[in-house]
Image (cartoon, rainbow, N blue to C red):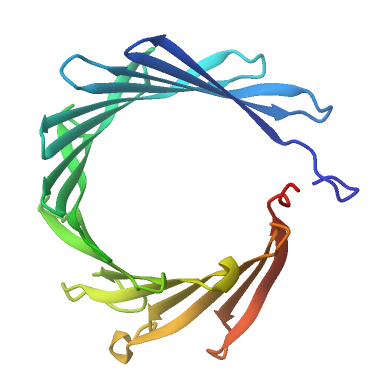
Length: 292
């Protein structure tokens, strides 16, 4: 925004897609900022090249470069992702993260992922590895769990594991998400996060419910759409007292006969007295009217 209340470009992004051959596609994304005189200066280039191999493996190289004041590009990071279907039900993805070191790109971190499908259930495991002091690899984080889909119901569970003082991986956080869809079209999603760490409390070695987020998406007559999001958090320093609502938002979209959608958003948050108070509201319109 400028002084007269209007807007002017801050970042320009140009994307170019090139079909190198029947198996290879390269995408180049260039980002420009503007100086005090409004002149564009190249600040970042992200080049992504994806190649499909004969055995079904898909290899993607994503290179990020930043430019100096003379717009000379220098690579700051490169990611090499190799995705392979080991069997009809097992997908394996390995991502290597390389950074410049001593004048060349060296692998500093690696992410290993595996998804296994069985009927309507998918089990997943994601392992993050980093270099140790001896040049080998050590596990820094593991995310594992499953997703299920059964018609109008869905479920996802993810466990986050970190190494303890002895290097043994243990669960420090668990997130579950339950989704349901009613015949009316209303959708509800409940996400619960359990953690070994709660504000104001010492660890006791077990997981406790730390947060619950409930989202309800409704559809009314005339294309009316609404979304209500409610956040509940554990009571500070007294988890035994249960959960309390800490914020709530409501988004309503009503589309008129001219095709223009009118949107109203409101946000409530807990004040110093523990009561929900309206802290923000916004009204707007979007979409072009229908052509006659």
